Image 1 (cartoon, rainbow, N blue to C red):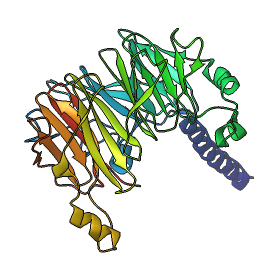
Image 2: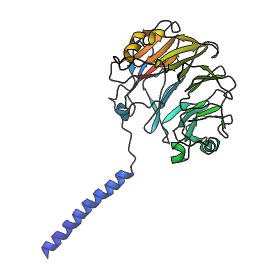
Image 3: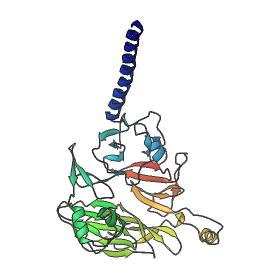
Image 4: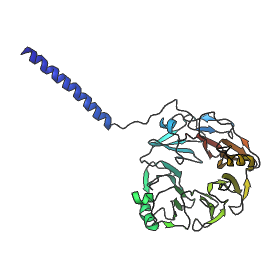
Length: 367
C-alpha cells in the first residue's frame, strides 16, 4: 500500500512534466517568428557620397536572409528621399544624409515582393497583380487597383500559363506618371488608367519587357522591338530606336533620356542619349563595348562571354554605366570613361541606383 502511494505521485509528476512540454510547444507555434538581424551582416549594400571613389558598407540592420539571398531585382528603388528596400516583413529606408542609424524599418502587412515609387506614395505589387499603396505622410497600406484582373481578363482574351492556372494576367511592371496616369505592363498589352485604377484600357503596344520613364511630359519605354516614345500621355506610341533587337534600359538624364539597346546580330549592348525629349539620338560609350577582335574570338569559340553594358544612370555631373565586370563613370556625357574601384567581394555583378549625388551599389548573389 505504501509503495502504491509513492508510485501514484510519481506518475502524476511525469504526466505534469510531459503536459508542460506540450503546452510550451503549442505556445511556441502561436508566437510569431521574429525576423533575424545581425550586427555582423555585411556586403549587401554599399554607399558612396563622393562619386564612387570610396564606399561604405551600410548593410547593418538589414535581415540576415539577405546575406544568403541578396536583394530582389525589383525589390528596391531610390528617389530624392533615399533608398527603399523590401525584405522580410518590412520596408527599409535609408536616407541620403543619415546621421547615426543606416536604416529605419516599417512593418509591411502584405506578401508583395516588389515596390516602386508612385505619385502619392509607395506602390507594392506581385506578379499576380495584387497591389498595396501607402500614401505619403500616412502609415496605413490600402489595396489598390482591385478590379484590374477582372478588367484585364476581359480586355486581353489570349491564353497563357497564368490565365490557364490562375485566370489572371501576369504583372511585370507598374509605372505612374507625374500627372497620375498609371501603366501596368503585362505579357501582351500595356494597360493604362487615368482615374486611379478604376477603369483600364489597352494601348496598342505591350510585351513582358516594358519599363517606363518620364521626362517633361514625354514617356519612353523599353520593348522587345527597341525603344518606344509617347508624347500624348501613353495613348499612342512610336518606335524611335532599334538595332535589330530589344530595349534593355531607359533612364532620365538632364535634358532628356539615356537608353541601352541590344543588337541581336552582334549580341552586344550599346548606349544612346537624347537631349531633345527623345526625338533624335546619339550613340555614346563605344569604349565600353567589345572590340571587333573580341567579337571574332567569341564567334569562333575562343571566348565564352564578353562584358555587357547593363545599366546607365546620371549622378550629378556624371553618367554612370554598369557593366558585368564593373561600374564606369563619365564627366563629358559619354566621350570618355573611367572605371570605379568597387568593394572587393565575391559577387556576380552589381546593381546600382542613384539618389541625387549619392550612389548605392548592390552586389548580385547569383542563382
